[in-house]
Image (cartoon, rainbow, N blue to C red; front, top):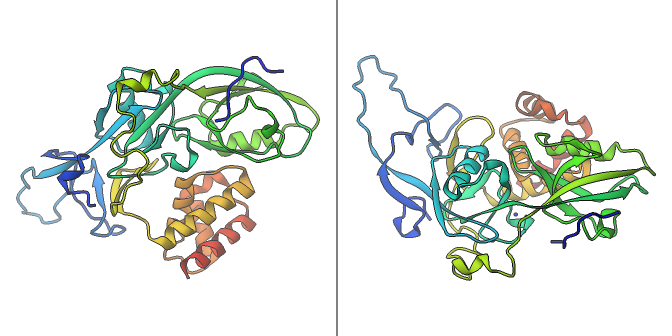
Amino acid sequence: MLRNSGRRTKNNAHQLKTGFMENGVDPGINECKTPRETPKTRHIGSTGHSHGQHAPPHPPRVRPRLVFHTQLAHGSSTQRIEGFTNVKELYAKIAEVFNISPTEILFCTLNTHKVDMQKLLGGQIGLEDFIFAHVRGETKEVEITKTEDALGLTITDNGAGYAFIKRIKEGSITDRLESVNVGDNIEAINEQTIVGCRHYEVAKMLRELPKSETFTLRLVQPKKAFDMIGQRCRPTKSPSEGKMSSGRETLRLRSKGMATVEEMPSEGEEEASRKVDDLLESYMGIRDVELAASLVETAKEKQNPEEFSKGLDNVLGEFAFPPEFVLEVWEAIRQAEH
Protein backbone atom coordinates (compact mmCIF):
# COMPACT_ATOMS: atom_id res chain seq x y z
CA MET A 1 0.00 0.00 0.00
CA LEU A 2 1.47 3.31 -1.07
CA ARG A 3 0.50 6.62 0.52
CA ASN A 4 2.71 8.81 -1.58
CA SER A 5 4.51 8.10 -4.80
CA GLY A 6 7.57 9.35 -6.66
CA ARG A 7 9.78 8.47 -9.62
CA ARG A 8 12.95 6.45 -9.59
CA THR A 9 15.31 8.48 -9.74
CA LYS A 10 29.13 9.29 -7.05
CA ASN A 11 45.81 21.27 -11.04
CA ASN A 12 46.97 22.20 -8.98
CA ALA A 13 45.59 23.43 -5.70
CA HIS A 14 47.65 26.56 -5.81
CA GLN A 15 46.61 27.87 -9.26
CA LEU A 16 44.38 30.90 -8.88
CA LYS A 17 42.84 30.46 -12.32
CA THR A 18 40.58 27.66 -11.08
CA GLY A 19 38.39 30.10 -9.14
CA PHE A 20 38.15 27.64 -6.25
CA MET A 21 41.28 28.82 -4.41
CA GLU A 22 41.81 32.34 -3.13
CA ASN A 23 44.84 33.90 -1.51
CA GLY A 24 44.39 35.21 1.98
CA VAL A 25 45.74 35.06 5.49
CA ASP A 26 44.23 32.09 7.26
CA PRO A 27 45.95 31.19 10.55
CA GLY A 28 43.78 28.06 10.71
CA ILE A 29 45.59 26.48 7.76
CA ASN A 30 49.21 25.57 8.46
CA GLU A 31 51.63 23.01 7.15
CA CYS A 32 52.75 20.41 9.63
CA LYS A 33 54.26 16.98 9.57
CA THR A 34 53.83 13.97 11.80
CA PRO A 35 55.67 10.64 11.63
CA ARG A 36 52.76 9.19 9.63
CA GLU A 37 52.57 12.01 7.08
CA THR A 38 54.44 12.76 3.89
CA PRO A 39 55.45 16.25 2.77
CA LYS A 40 52.56 16.09 0.29
CA THR A 41 49.97 16.14 3.07
CA ARG A 42 48.76 19.36 4.67
CA HIS A 43 46.45 19.47 7.68
CA ILE A 44 43.55 21.89 7.60
CA GLY A 45 42.85 23.66 10.86
CA SER A 46 45.92 22.42 12.76
CA THR A 47 48.81 24.46 14.15
CA GLY A 48 52.51 23.69 13.99
CA HIS A 49 54.91 23.66 16.96
CA SER A 50 58.64 24.12 16.98
CA HIS A 51 60.66 21.40 18.65
CA GLY A 52 63.56 23.74 19.48
CA GLN A 53 63.72 25.14 23.00
CA HIS A 54 64.64 28.67 21.90
CA ALA A 55 63.06 28.82 18.47
CA PRO A 56 61.30 32.15 17.92
CA PRO A 57 57.58 32.05 17.13
CA HIS A 58 56.73 31.98 13.44
CA PRO A 59 54.74 34.96 12.15
CA PRO A 60 51.48 34.22 10.33
CA ARG A 61 52.13 33.24 6.72
CA VAL A 62 49.97 33.83 3.68
CA ARG A 63 48.14 30.65 2.76
CA PRO A 64 45.72 29.87 -0.07
CA ARG A 65 42.24 29.36 1.34
CA LEU A 66 40.26 26.33 0.21
CA VAL A 67 37.09 27.83 -1.21
CA PHE A 68 34.39 25.66 -2.79
CA HIS A 69 31.33 26.69 -4.78
CA THR A 70 27.95 25.17 -3.94
CA GLN A 71 24.29 25.20 -4.98
CA LEU A 72 21.12 23.51 -3.82
CA ALA A 73 20.48 20.68 -6.29
CA HIS A 74 16.85 21.68 -6.92
CA GLY A 75 17.92 25.21 -7.87
CA SER A 76 19.51 28.18 -6.13
CA SER A 77 22.09 30.89 -6.47
CA THR A 78 25.77 29.93 -6.23
CA GLN A 79 27.45 30.41 -2.86
CA ARG A 80 30.97 29.91 -1.55
CA ILE A 81 31.96 27.90 1.50
CA GLU A 82 35.24 27.27 3.30
CA GLY A 83 36.70 26.32 6.66
CA PHE A 84 35.22 22.82 7.16
CA THR A 85 37.18 19.72 8.19
CA ASN A 86 34.53 16.96 8.09
CA VAL A 87 31.18 16.19 6.50
CA LYS A 88 29.08 17.54 9.38
CA GLU A 89 30.91 20.85 9.25
CA LEU A 90 30.49 20.90 5.45
CA TYR A 91 26.71 20.52 5.83
CA ALA A 92 26.68 23.26 8.47
CA LYS A 93 28.52 25.63 6.12
CA ILE A 94 26.13 24.88 3.25
CA ALA A 95 23.12 25.31 5.53
CA GLU A 96 24.46 28.65 6.77
CA VAL A 97 24.88 30.23 3.34
CA PHE A 98 21.41 29.07 2.21
CA ASN A 99 19.71 29.84 5.55
CA ILE A 100 18.42 26.31 6.11
CA SER A 101 18.93 23.72 8.84
CA PRO A 102 21.81 21.23 8.39
CA THR A 103 19.28 18.45 9.02
CA GLU A 104 17.54 19.41 5.76
CA ILE A 105 20.54 18.14 3.75
CA LEU A 106 20.24 14.48 2.76
CA PHE A 107 23.48 14.15 0.76
CA CYS A 108 25.70 15.97 -1.72
CA THR A 109 26.85 15.20 -5.24
CA LEU A 110 29.89 16.58 -7.02
CA ASN A 111 29.64 18.42 -10.36
CA THR A 112 26.03 17.43 -11.06
CA HIS A 113 22.66 18.43 -9.61
CA LYS A 114 21.23 15.00 -10.50
CA VAL A 115 20.73 12.13 -8.05
CA ASP A 116 23.79 10.36 -9.45
CA MET A 117 25.28 7.84 -7.04
CA GLN A 118 28.48 7.71 -9.10
CA LYS A 119 29.07 11.38 -8.24
CA LEU A 120 28.17 11.06 -4.57
CA LEU A 121 30.34 13.04 -2.17
CA GLY A 122 32.30 10.63 -0.01
CA GLY A 123 35.43 11.32 1.98
CA GLN A 124 37.23 13.28 -0.71
CA ILE A 125 36.53 16.46 -2.66
CA GLY A 126 38.68 17.47 -5.63
CA LEU A 127 39.87 21.04 -5.29
CA GLU A 128 37.94 22.02 -8.43
CA ASP A 129 34.74 20.16 -7.58
CA PHE A 130 31.37 21.97 -7.46
CA ILE A 131 29.16 20.79 -4.59
CA PHE A 132 25.39 20.27 -5.02
CA ALA A 133 23.34 19.74 -1.85
CA HIS A 134 20.18 17.60 -2.08
CA VAL A 135 17.64 18.58 0.57
CA ARG A 136 14.53 16.99 2.03
CA GLY A 137 11.53 16.75 -0.24
CA GLU A 138 8.31 14.76 0.11
CA THR A 139 7.85 12.07 2.76
CA LYS A 140 6.20 8.80 1.77
CA GLU A 141 5.39 5.49 3.43
CA VAL A 142 5.64 2.19 1.59
CA GLU A 143 4.46 -1.24 2.77
CA ILE A 144 6.66 -4.12 1.64
CA THR A 145 6.12 -7.85 2.04
CA LYS A 146 9.43 -9.64 2.41
CA THR A 147 8.81 -12.57 0.07
CA GLU A 148 12.55 -13.23 -0.35
CA ASP A 149 15.54 -13.20 1.97
CA ALA A 150 17.09 -10.18 0.25
CA LEU A 151 15.27 -6.94 -0.48
CA GLY A 152 17.72 -5.90 -3.20
CA LEU A 153 18.70 -2.65 -1.44
CA THR A 154 22.21 -1.31 -1.03
CA ILE A 155 22.49 1.28 1.73
CA THR A 156 24.97 4.10 2.27
CA ASP A 157 24.94 7.13 4.58
CA ASN A 158 25.81 10.79 4.43
CA GLY A 159 28.23 10.78 7.35
CA ALA A 160 25.86 12.95 9.39
CA GLY A 161 23.13 10.59 10.57
CA TYR A 162 21.10 9.84 7.44
CA ALA A 163 21.11 6.48 5.67
CA PHE A 164 19.77 6.33 2.14
CA ILE A 165 19.37 3.99 -0.81
CA LYS A 166 22.39 3.89 -3.11
CA ARG A 167 21.43 1.00 -5.36
CA ILE A 168 18.38 -1.15 -6.15
CA LYS A 169 19.06 -4.57 -7.60
CA GLU A 170 17.26 -5.24 -10.85
CA GLY A 171 14.43 -7.76 -10.52
CA SER A 172 14.43 -7.58 -6.70
CA ILE A 173 11.47 -7.02 -4.36
CA THR A 174 12.28 -3.33 -4.12
CA ASP A 175 12.81 -2.96 -7.86
CA ARG A 176 9.16 -3.87 -8.37
CA LEU A 177 8.07 -0.93 -6.19
CA GLU A 178 8.09 2.19 -8.34
CA SER A 179 7.70 4.39 -5.28
CA VAL A 180 11.09 3.40 -3.84
CA ASN A 181 13.94 5.25 -5.51
CA VAL A 182 17.68 5.57 -5.43
CA GLY A 183 18.51 8.58 -3.25
CA ASP A 184 15.57 8.09 -0.86
CA ASN A 185 16.48 8.61 2.80
CA ILE A 186 15.25 5.80 5.05
CA GLU A 187 13.80 7.68 8.01
CA ALA A 188 12.00 4.86 9.83
CA ILE A 189 11.37 1.10 9.73
CA ASN A 190 7.99 0.10 11.17
CA GLU A 191 7.70 3.53 12.88
CA GLN A 192 11.10 3.05 14.54
CA THR A 193 13.23 6.04 13.61
CA ILE A 194 16.70 5.22 12.35
CA VAL A 195 17.99 8.79 12.13
CA GLY A 196 21.49 8.71 13.59
CA CYS A 197 22.08 5.05 12.68
CA ARG A 198 25.00 4.11 10.46
CA HIS A 199 24.34 2.45 7.11
CA TYR A 200 25.59 -0.97 8.23
CA GLU A 201 23.18 -0.88 11.17
CA VAL A 202 20.26 -0.10 8.86
CA ALA A 203 21.29 -2.84 6.43
CA LYS A 204 21.44 -5.31 9.33
CA MET A 205 17.94 -4.31 10.51
CA LEU A 206 16.52 -4.90 7.03
CA ARG A 207 18.27 -8.27 6.66
CA GLU A 208 16.90 -9.45 10.02
CA LEU A 209 13.27 -8.64 9.24
CA PRO A 210 11.28 -11.92 9.24
CA LYS A 211 10.54 -13.43 5.87
CA SER A 212 6.91 -13.38 4.67
CA GLU A 213 6.03 -10.49 6.99
CA THR A 214 4.91 -7.05 5.84
CA PHE A 215 6.78 -3.99 7.11
CA THR A 216 6.64 -0.24 6.51
CA LEU A 217 9.41 2.06 5.33
CA ARG A 218 9.11 5.80 5.86
CA LEU A 219 11.16 7.44 3.13
CA VAL A 220 12.14 11.02 2.35
CA GLN A 221 12.95 11.75 -1.26
CA PRO A 222 15.30 14.54 -2.34
CA LYS A 223 13.59 17.77 -3.33
CA LYS A 224 13.26 18.17 -7.08
CA ALA A 225 13.06 21.31 -9.18
CA PHE A 226 9.48 22.02 -10.27
CA ASP A 227 9.71 21.88 -14.05
CA MET A 228 13.15 23.54 -13.73
CA ILE A 229 11.62 26.79 -12.38
CA GLY A 230 14.26 26.94 -9.68
CA GLN A 231 17.01 26.34 -12.19
CA ARG A 232 16.19 29.52 -14.11
CA CYS A 233 18.01 31.47 -11.41
CA ARG A 234 21.29 30.00 -12.57
CA PRO A 235 22.94 29.03 -15.86
CA THR A 236 21.65 25.84 -17.45
CA LYS A 237 24.99 24.29 -16.66
CA SER A 238 27.35 25.27 -13.89
CA PRO A 239 30.97 25.99 -14.85
CA SER A 240 32.19 22.61 -13.68
CA GLU A 241 29.03 20.52 -13.98
CA GLY A 242 29.63 17.23 -15.71
CA LYS A 243 33.37 17.43 -15.20
CA MET A 244 35.29 15.60 -12.52
CA SER A 245 38.35 17.33 -11.15
CA SER A 246 41.40 16.83 -13.32
CA GLY A 247 43.78 18.10 -10.65
CA ARG A 248 46.17 16.00 -8.67
CA GLU A 249 45.10 17.15 -5.21
CA THR A 250 42.02 16.46 -3.16
CA LEU A 251 40.61 17.50 0.21
CA ARG A 252 40.34 14.35 2.32
CA LEU A 253 37.57 14.61 4.92
CA ARG A 254 37.87 12.40 7.98
CA SER A 255 35.28 11.47 10.58
CA LYS A 256 38.05 11.68 13.21
CA GLY A 257 40.87 14.18 13.03
CA MET A 258 41.65 17.04 10.70
CA ALA A 259 41.01 17.20 6.98
CA THR A 260 44.11 17.02 4.81
CA VAL A 261 45.04 18.07 1.31
CA GLU A 262 46.54 15.03 -0.38
CA GLU A 263 47.63 13.75 -3.73
CA MET A 264 44.84 12.04 -5.65
CA PRO A 265 44.85 8.24 -5.09
CA SER A 266 46.94 6.22 -7.52
CA GLU A 267 45.25 4.01 -10.10
CA GLY A 268 46.13 0.98 -7.98
CA GLU A 269 44.59 2.52 -4.87
CA GLU A 270 41.44 3.50 -6.76
CA GLU A 271 41.11 -0.02 -8.18
CA ALA A 272 41.63 -1.50 -4.70
CA SER A 273 38.96 0.81 -3.25
CA ARG A 274 36.47 -0.22 -5.97
CA LYS A 275 37.08 -3.91 -5.23
CA VAL A 276 36.68 -3.35 -1.48
CA ASP A 277 33.48 -1.35 -2.04
CA ASP A 278 32.09 -4.29 -4.03
CA LEU A 279 32.97 -6.63 -1.14
CA LEU A 280 31.23 -4.32 1.34
CA GLU A 281 28.08 -4.56 -0.72
CA SER A 282 28.36 -8.33 -1.04
CA TYR A 283 28.97 -8.99 2.67
CA MET A 284 27.13 -6.15 4.39
CA GLY A 285 24.66 -4.66 1.91
CA ILE A 286 26.35 -1.26 2.05
CA ARG A 287 28.47 0.86 -0.25
CA ASP A 288 30.84 3.42 1.22
CA VAL A 289 33.77 4.81 -0.76
CA GLU A 290 35.23 6.49 2.32
CA LEU A 291 35.13 3.25 4.30
CA ALA A 292 36.64 1.37 1.36
CA ALA A 293 39.45 3.93 1.13
CA SER A 294 40.06 3.60 4.88
CA LEU A 295 40.39 -0.18 4.53
CA VAL A 296 42.90 0.27 1.71
CA GLU A 297 44.83 2.82 3.76
CA THR A 298 44.91 0.52 6.78
CA ALA A 299 46.43 -2.25 4.65
CA LYS A 300 49.44 -0.08 3.79
CA GLU A 301 52.72 -1.36 5.24
CA LYS A 302 50.99 -4.43 6.65
CA GLN A 303 52.84 -7.65 5.90
CA ASN A 304 50.08 -10.24 6.27
CA PRO A 305 46.33 -10.65 6.96
CA GLU A 306 46.93 -10.95 10.71
CA GLU A 307 48.57 -7.53 10.90
CA PHE A 308 45.83 -6.12 8.70
CA SER A 309 43.13 -7.56 10.97
CA LYS A 310 44.76 -6.02 14.05
CA GLY A 311 44.98 -2.69 12.29
CA LEU A 312 41.26 -2.83 11.44
CA ASP A 313 40.40 -3.59 15.07
CA ASN A 314 42.28 -0.46 16.13
CA VAL A 315 40.67 1.97 13.70
CA LEU A 316 37.38 0.33 12.60
CA GLY A 317 36.57 -2.06 15.41
CA GLU A 318 32.92 -0.98 15.62
CA PHE A 319 32.22 -2.72 12.30
CA ALA A 320 33.23 -6.16 13.68
CA PHE A 321 34.25 -7.42 10.23
CA PRO A 322 34.08 -11.25 9.98
CA PRO A 323 37.44 -13.02 9.42
CA GLU A 324 36.47 -14.31 5.96
CA PHE A 325 35.63 -10.74 4.88
CA VAL A 326 38.96 -9.41 6.17
CA LEU A 327 40.82 -12.12 4.24
CA GLU A 328 38.98 -11.37 1.00
CA VAL A 329 39.62 -7.65 1.40
CA TRP A 330 43.33 -8.31 1.98
CA GLU A 331 43.57 -10.46 -1.15
CA ALA A 332 41.61 -7.93 -3.24
CA ILE A 333 43.91 -5.09 -2.18
CA ARG A 334 47.05 -7.12 -2.90
CA GLN A 335 45.74 -8.15 -6.34
CA ALA A 336 44.95 -4.52 -7.21
CA GLU A 337 48.49 -3.49 -6.29
CA HIS A 338 50.09 -5.86 -8.79
